[in-house]
View (tube, one colour):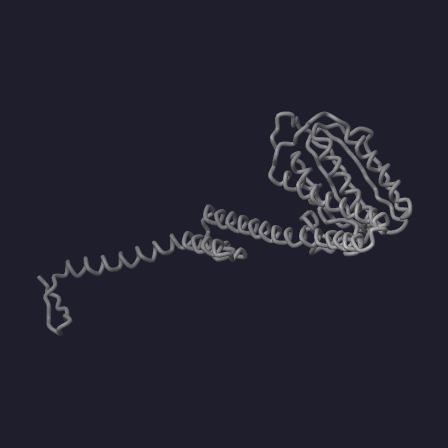
Length: 319
């Protein structure tokens, strides 16, 4: 039998049979490979764990998909889902912070005016009558703000639609057009409708009225003097499609996707006419009906907002 001599820690010689040496080397290589393979297989999980810890620590901008470096489809799907959830959480958190900031800003101005008016009345009671109209306007603005916030909160919580019935959406649109043309006489920016003579569906008339009214109001506020707001309606076997287009300047492309977020007001001049919740409420109202709302800048100028509502029975729906 061949004997292999190994030097020990004490610089002595030890006799090791070849079979034991082979087993030792094989076991060592296997252990190294097992450790490497284990770390390689668990790397995506460790990456996901690190990402979760980063999210929990408040670093909501954390994303892991690019760092996974794996061809496993399931793991790649996990990375996609993680990044989507992180992005959504970041957007919700930023939206909440912006919401608190904007609500406080919207409330502060009318409250300051009301406080000033009360102070003037205390000093000069005779001015109460002259200030009453302005105070009533500020109170109405606050009441409208609270109503809009509560409506948006109810829709975002996916509460039941409430009263659901069959109706013709065109009846709602025609009333909105009449009111818009009456209110927009000074601006000379008429609202016109083209399309189907009936747009029958089932849904909540109040919510869809508010959605359409907010979209038309937004188009009116951004239309120039003498511009035209065009509304087109079509109905097929699957859905009703309503499109509202204006002749305004449109929306900068980087801001286009954000116009349905609460308190987003791209045009600061038009922003003074609203509180920035109209399109957010419109989007939530349409989506609560299982529909979709889209936006795009027109090649000839202006913004086009499309509303699609599926032709489904929502009587027993809780969405």
